[in-house]
Length: 338
Image 1: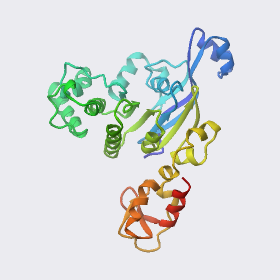
Image 2: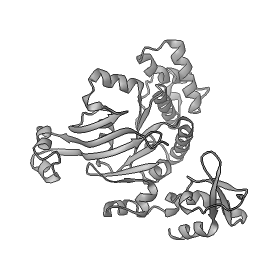
Image 3: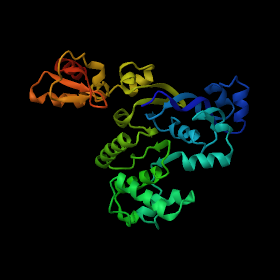
Image 4: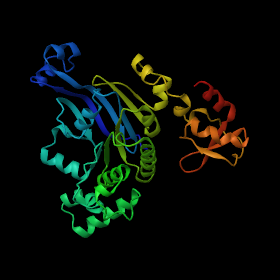
């Protein structure tokens, strides 16, 4: 993951109701909740500032009505923000023409929503190829790319099936393949797994992480499920009443909540799920043990590896290079903290 920002939001507002722009401009650009209420306005997104880095999974989460889905639609201008700046590769999307936005959405952005929205009269292959047809790409090229996407999401052999012949998880895979067919730089996913049964949802999370390990996309992922967020996210932003109350790594949110709301939101999350091996490892002074684990793994993932009786695990980086040691005693300390 790069530290370079792919998407930047500065002072973004979305206020619903007549006179929304005046309410922002006449209150120094930052009207408070009471001012909006008196004016009969709804502040769905309020003064949001965030950066999404190239190659990261950035999760936006909150309870229903917190503004997370409205925000993600503002980021792609499916909903027009009331004010602020949204920079994509340095270009301010709020200054872009509608023609330019259509071009960006078609060629540089992918979107997956909770409802799969597959076209029932088209096969799996034709559904995946559909956005490429809209781009005007010739049939052989678009079908070749669509086949590669279908294979990538594990549906090889289902190309001629229709949506009604697929399970819910398979339909969602088709939706994911379709959004990937345009080879987007920025991928938006709005609660893509929330309509699935728990077991299928877990499988789709595994599939999503596998795809990201291959594709390394820049992803904005919306969810209301904190367990899903900490499993998938590089960083998380928690929203409440249209505002981002804290943004950081899962570890930072659980171990150092900025507000009482965040503390309550994360209260029941086991520390072992969010504390990373990298936070506990010690410097390696000799050859690593035979059993190793990635530095990005959680303590809960590392714990079962001590079942063979060893006192240490080797820690490796993303390229498999040794970088440290993880001691059983340190893992036990975190597990005992709940």
